[in-house]
Structures are given as structure tokens and as C-alpha cells.
Amino acid sequence: MKNWIRKYWKFLLGLAISAVFVYSAARKLEWEDFFLAVRSANYWWLIPGVGVYMIGLWVRAWRWHYLLRPVKPISTSTMFPIVTIGYMGNNIYPARAGEVLRAVILKRHENVPISASLATVIVERIFDGVVMLAFIFVNLGELSRLTDFSIPLAGLQIGLQDLALWGSIAFFGALAVFILAAMFPEVTERLLAWFVNHFLPEKLRPKVMGVAVRFLAGLESLHSPLESLMIFLTSAVIWLLETGKYWFVMHAFGFSVSFFALMLMNGVVNLATTLPGAPGYVGTFDAPGIAVLAAYGVDVNVAAGYTVVLHIALWVVPTLLGAYYLAREGVKWSDNLRKETDLKEPV
Image (cartoon, rainbow, N blue to C red; front, top):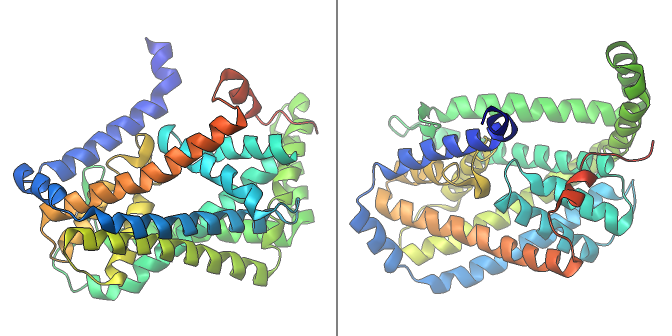
């Protein structure tokens, strides 16, 4: 039993955190009003919402193509199915395993080193976080006028200013480190070599340095400020398109808040989903989203119905499409595939 707990403690922790979030949201609901909101929604609005989201997925594929150009030029049409497989993996496996899954599929397709492609995936996530913070900062002035506004995070009531502060430290700090590493690769490699030679066993040093060098190659797209700006702008377009889906689904439920309010909701829920949680971001997406809409005066039951339907719509499209592409690849998340994720690449 102890061995099982040690093996799956991250998964169990995610389930526990998600359960706290779900309880935080569910305890405030009048269930009859919640189900009435869900039943009476006009689901035709989901069609344009899904269309906008698909455009966003294509832009994500273009961004990954752009990031990988220094490593290997690969067309966006080749990247799109792999990106979709990755998002499917994030939705059904714990600990964002889809990021590793798409790196493995890319290596099978294009022989791109896993460590290099994972570096670009991390860069994506950092820029996503920066854009989410920008969405929050745009609305901080307005929210400061709302009474006692806070976000439920794992059972605690966290002020939005606190969330923005700690998020800024994390994402801007990581971005600064990555940009410096990309701008000064030789210095970074020497520092890594010193660390490896002083703190790791001799037999591990060549393997670790090989992975580190390939990882640095994946950061090359950050070498130029213009390239970094392009990645940021592309990330902003991606998340504005996703906010467009929020806007279309809002019309299905008949309430109205500004597009900026939906940008804030998008930023808050996606920062919250960086916390450990159950697969599919159950709870970590929903409770903060409901809190944001309630702060704007939306009835909590309508806000919950909207958020749950939006979450399902965001989950279903990439999951089904990714499963289709994965089946077409003839690949399963098997023990053999797991072994490929150990970064056992030739030095």
C-alpha cells in the first residue's frame, strides 16, 4: 500500500486539490436553478465557439512550428495533429503528460530530440502565463472597485492582487532566465557544465550534459527580442481567440459581461489550472471561473452552468480530435511509449 501511495502521490494530491475546488464551488449552488440554467441554454452558440477554438488550435500549431524552426523547420499542417494529441493527453492524463506525449510523437515523426522539443513546450507555457497575467492586469483597476473580491484556491480565499503578484514572480522570472540562457548559450553551457561536474556522479555527466545542450537548442528562438515579441503576440492571439469562445458560449446562457471580464476569467482560470489537479482540470478551472463571474454580478447558478458547459466544450473538442489523430498514428500510451519519455537519447 505504501509503495502504491509513493508511486501515485502526485495523482492523489491532484484529486484532493480538485475535490476541494469542486466543494468550494458546489456548496454555494441552488441545484434546481443550476440545472434550469443548463437545460435552458441555447447550445447553437457552441458551434461558432468551437469554430473559433479550432482556429486557436491551428495558431498554437503555427507557434510551435515557429519555436522549432532553429531546431528543424516543420510545417504547421504537420504540427497540428501532434499539438492536438498533446492537448488530448493533458485532458485525460495527470501532470500534463500530454506535453511529453507530443514531444515523443514529434520525435517519431521528425526525429526532433525530445529535450529540445520540451524546451519549446516550456517556452510556450511561460508565454501563455505572461499573457494570462496581462489579461489580469488589464482588469485590476476595475476589480479593485469590487467589494471583497477573491478567488477560491484550494479552499483559501486568495486576493487577485496576490495571485497576480506570485504569478508575475513565477512567469516573468522564468522568462528572464530562459531569455538570458538563449542570449548567452556559451556562458549558460559553461555554468551547467560546472554544476554537473561538481554535483553529479561521473557516469551521469555525459548524459545530463547531452540533454542540457539539446534543451538549450530548443531555446534558440528566444535569442532575438523580435522573435520573443513575435511569440508573445502569437500567444496573445491564441488566448484572445479562446476568449472568443467564452464570449460565444456566454450568449448561450443569456447573461452579459464585457469581453474584458471574460479575458479576466480566462486569465484567472488558466493560472489556477497550473496547480496540481485531477485530469481535465476538474474543479481548478470551474471554481475560479464561477467566482469571477459572480464578482461581476452574474447569478452564481447561471455562472456555474455556463462555466461547466464551457469547460466541457473546451475539453471535448481537442480530446476527441486528439484521440482520432493518436489512433491514426497507431500509437497507444503503453509501457513502450512511457520508456521513450525518459529522455534516453544518444548524446
